[in-house]
Length: 380
Image 1 (cartoon, helix red, strand yellow):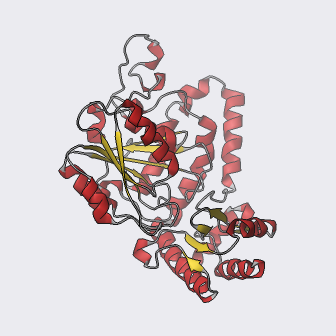
Image 2 (spheres, rainbow, N blue to C red; image 1 turned 90 degrees about the vertical axis):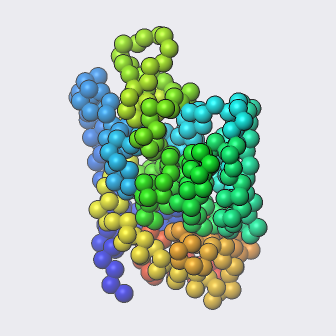
Image 3 (cartoon, rainbow, N blue to C red; image 1 turned 30 degrees about the horizontal axis):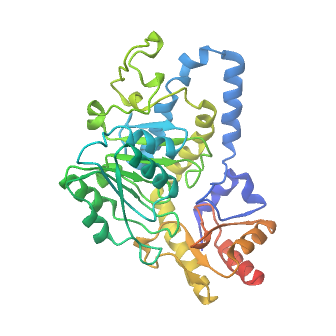
């Protein structure tokens, strides 16, 4: 099959020597990332403190706009943060959990880091309620919707569940939440860059994610979307001097939040990570998420077919519309086999209670899918 997306392989050096099927965990590094980091070093070396006013200060929003193009946000609505845990903590800190409306609704397949933060919020009066999964693959939508009531203040769901690659109906969840006056935060870490995402069409109030996976942006560059109309009413307690209306006045009095999305920032931004992340965002936008999704649907369907022919249990939805970019294959000694595959330069990963996660991306060859299934069979 002709695959014009394979022309992008030359942009990712690791693909020359490795079967790279782990972009759901760490996307391959674009070659131009090295140039961007060299630009950072040169700027620091030659411009010194002047670099802040010449571009560094605006980078959390300017780089956030590159993400915004991919997730359907308006300019200025996305700010860069170190990671999703910080983003989630900022969102939680915008609310008072001491009153009757103190319920957080989520599901038990949400990413553990999110759930850790919500459970710790119970020390400030919040109540966490999680909708259970019966098969460890899907979350019944009706159970999640039924848990959302007039005492709910925040609903938190992953667009794509990390453990199984199940796609949740975030728009339906947001509609129900807004009916009862609750807000919604969507974790789009496992969808942005491989599934079309439109935070406006979904109707979410907040969205969090990071650059490590499908966006090929590397670690240290999380992002937070906050719907613009909410800015005036939100005063995050997780804050810092960068969020101040006049940060360089160094006023030690009460916090006076910036009017724009800077109000959701905190301490000094991690500038090197923002330099590193740009190339991945630019490439994803150039390739186009719709094209990436079309190839992903085809390749994940082929992976599922080959895995089932080999007699492997598949822990991922079979319907394309319910499946993200990852296929989870459950075989005996999955962790041991994953380690052996790595020794053979075939990179996948393993998650307890799920299995071996295999993730083709737009730069993946069809023959690499055949190879990984064949290598798992050899290991068994």
